[in-house]
Length: 79
Image 1: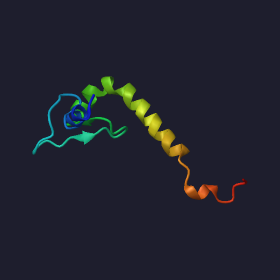
Image 2 (image 1 turned 120 degrees about the vertical axis):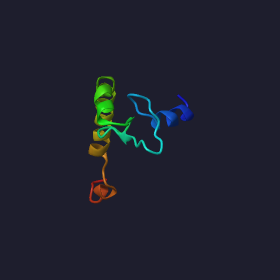
Image 3 (image 1 turned 90 degrees about the vertical axis):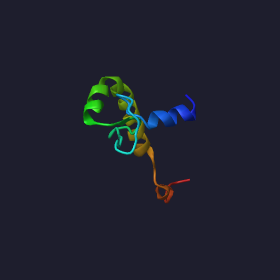
């Protein structure tokens, strides 16, 4: 998908497809931030479709946090 399609997808509910407009505020998936929903019902309805991708993304994010080392961690290390 190109950037225009990706941007458009980010502005719509992953479950029902409703666009984010003045009176509709979409909320990101709490776990992965990859998709957005207009309501808890839509999030629950879409969960079976999203669960596998969400778990993969959460694992990647967790690994990135676990393996990120502060720059100061090199101080005092043997050459």
